[in-house]
Image (tube, rainbow over all chains, first blue to last red; front, side):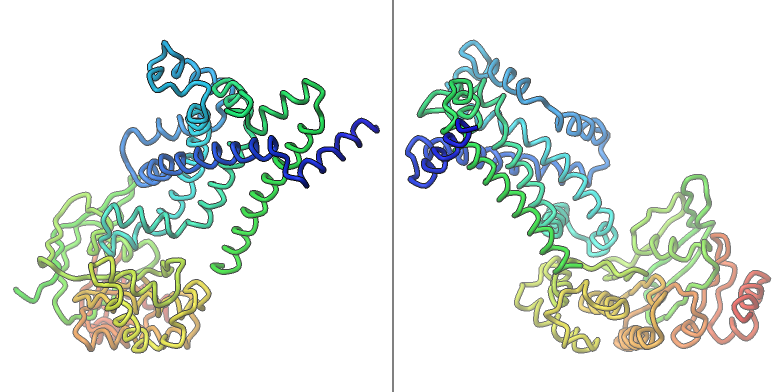
Length: 234
Length: 230
């Protein structure tokens, strides 16, 4: 019991004095997952908006793929991205393997389908509500899409935060693609796994506390956004 | 026939094996106030949707005067999650009106519809009647030559019905042609100059308001009016 108490005390001490290693790892995690979330949004929202409005034959297969991709195991994503980015792989020339860029790439693949699938459902429901109005007002496709995204902004914000939460909590893909190199590609989750296996519980616990805090803040923000939406727009 | 805004020729609509409209021939002339009457499922809403272009006919032809500005309001007002004024301005901006001018017009129209005090409120917090008034204001802002209204006062309180009817009449007085579906016979009498009575997807009677209510010709219309009276 004292081992855990000692580790916890050391962890709090590291957080309080903003330990350099701890800060570097936390900031890299935020940078990688934040960038991956932004790129995933740029890909997922237009795709979701298109699928939500189209009557194309491709619609049902795309929905099937998106829904299936929501359950993609991170290690499978890690393996595929590793193969793509490896020197002999089709994207080997980018030189992204064992770099933060490679990790961003992997996390984007992991969370873009989640955001797209959930956003598609939200946008489709909104489209069903507004379709007649949009047609009546003779809105163009672009105007419809912009309006749908604006009208669902709070619901979408919750999805985006969920996507970020999934990215920052993920360990398998970033471990395989990033290589968990100290000072270069070591993020919170991979570091926690490594430090725990080494018995360095203080750093693992400190990172765990920060990770949990971030996840709590993200969940809290999602909850607040939802509450705000319900209060303001009934 | 330059005053004909819309002409439906032998229009039929079939959906999921059901005949929603059958062989409908109707012309809408400028300045008319047409009430669509009939039981539930008679085809009133379908006819409005076909006229407005929300629904393509399965067969037949809809001839529309070129560049005919038209607007439609629905039984359940479809409002955006924005303020009252932004709901009206949105429709104008979508038509290419500059934001400032759109807001100015929106304020003027809201005042005409008795909603100016609610301009900054969020649209979805309004009462049912006020929401329908807002939908009408948004339609009015577009200065349509033809306004279509699908049971605009269904399930509204009498005061709200009065408010909505006042706006409808004001729009008609400003030169807008009106086609509306209703179950409210009194409303049809108060507003309409012409009645189209539908039964099972067919227009079985097309008469001016007074004649229709005084001496309906078709058995279906007689039965409908008797049921309504009872």
